Every structure is written in structure tokens, then in C-alpha cells.
Image (tube, rainbow, N blue to C red; front, side):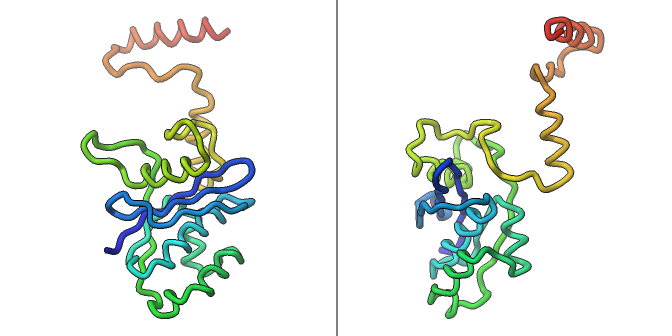
Length: 182
């Protein structure tokens, strides 16, 4: 009882959402057209809030959590919450938490539940791959750290070298990489 993880996967024509409980079971799924990534995540949260057993919603969109905290959500989200009889009865007893995700699997024995929610949302689009492709996301970069990290990763032509190399070997390898690029 209680905890649900939400995630949205976006595609050209529609956005897919999946709400997964703490046991990895899909509770709610939907597919509707949305123009903005924040709206898709907010709709997924709103759908989770319509479940009467939900006590905690974990979302990977910091902006969606902030919008709920300010009570500044999209019209479609407000309509879902307004039309839900559960929210009138429960009130504000449900917690909404942000959790940084898309970090991959952290354990070989236990599946990361948000990655599972994302995979189920992707399956709604009948995609061949369950894993997220780098650069294939429409999530907006909102913090300074996210923006600088994106620029840093975009400039990388080759993966970083091993920590096992000494300073001379690493410098020689970087020069070799540079000669190959130029």
C-alpha cells in the first residue's frame, strides 16, 4: 500500500505514462497528446493521485514537483484532479517526492523501480528497446548543473580514459585522440 512511481515517455505524436507501485506492478497507464514534457509528468502524477491507496508519489521531474508545490499545474492536470472523487476525500495526505533517476540499474538483484516505470511507459509506444537512448529525450534542462553537464558531455568525442593510467600515459593518449580528430 502506499508508494507509487510515475514516469512519462514522449514520442512524436503522443506521450505515454506509466504509474508503477512499489512491487513493480503497473497501476495506471495512459497515452494522450501533450506539447510539453512538464505536462506529461504532471498528468502522470495526477493519475497516481487518483488511486485511493496511494500515500506517496515519487516523480523524476523536478519541475513537475515544483509546479505541484506552487499549485501551478496545467489545465488538463487540474481537470483530472478536480474530477477525481478520491482527492476530495483524501485531501492533502499524499506526499509528492522528487527523486533523481535515469541513473540506470543500481543493483543486479533488484530492479530500479523508476527505470521499470520508464520501461513500461516506453512499451506503450511499442518501442523495440527498453533502455533510454542518449539525446533522445525532450526533458528540459533547468538547473545550472544539468546545463553544464550537457555541454560537457556533448563536447566529449571519446570516453574518458581509465583511472589506472598514470599521468604520462593519459597525456599521450589524449594527444593521440586529438591527432585522430584533427
